[in-house]
Image (tube, rainbow, N blue to C red; front, top):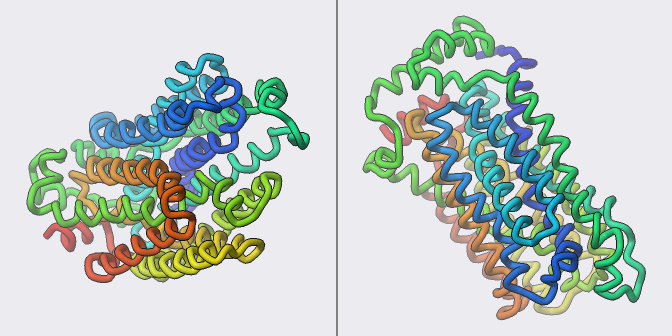
Length: 461
């Protein structure tokens, strides 16, 4: 296909990708709010309460990810996008509004459900509407909006929080604007893009592949025609119907775990978990500890965090323009190998107590390597590897595995950092990346330039 309706395709993909923006913002915003809401709720001396506040959203993510597959197949992709937008809007308002810690936790939990739903649903929807030759680029837009959401949260936190005078006590901070209101506005800021997402989601079409799966060929054909013209629509619909007819069973977990699909499911789960266990996301969750270990004061740390966010955005843009040119496999190999080397060097520097600007360079290099490879390519691959009949439940399963990986990574970093030091922790991440590199060398196929139906024949037979 040489041409397609670019304005229409980019509009519907960007609207869907707003789920990624809110995912990124909601995931990271709590890091900036943490020093203030802990004092407000009186949990600064309670590690268990602090851990619960940080992980309750991740528990919601797991539940949302698993609900996503069943609901996406039952009510459709577009309707579920509307639901996720509504969850984001209500949870962002509620999280900042509550003055009771338990109510705060409930709001964060529902926010996590929204993240879990959007993290799997947005790339899946984009993969199902995007023309084959630009599918990687358009699914990568979702990762682009995720990192923009991360950067937005970092900048918003930085701008909202007032400077803290030297020598301020915990009581002084708790009684200040930061302790009383700043953390609330950090969460409330997400209400604006949430409302925009909710409104715009009513103006995008349903996934034509879901419509065809449900037997609504006429509407599917109309949407495909709007995307690429009548010839493209006829060819795509015929391919979808042929793939669906090849297996008359109803898609679901039973089919997904059956023998023909186990190999591709294992591949998808490993890709999803590796994206988290490669270790880069601890830089966002524990940036303060990482930069302080490198010799920086807290005031400098806030600026350094914004620098990492900017690097994340810049190199995600690089990924958008390379994922369909270089291919998913090449970028995944580059990401795993590059991070393995960077973490090895970073660990050596921590071991010999190297401090200063060179440490920032290494951290930024790690984020740059991740942002142009493993970050976007993971979402591209898990959205396109699976057959139409099991795609929703397969993407949900992989996304659930990703959030399990995220939870274990987030939970174990402080334990590893305490037991092994920063150098030992990053050497472990280097070893994980080496394992990922070897796995991808032997098990990861190239998917660029192939239709979803062609991939089905190749991966499942």
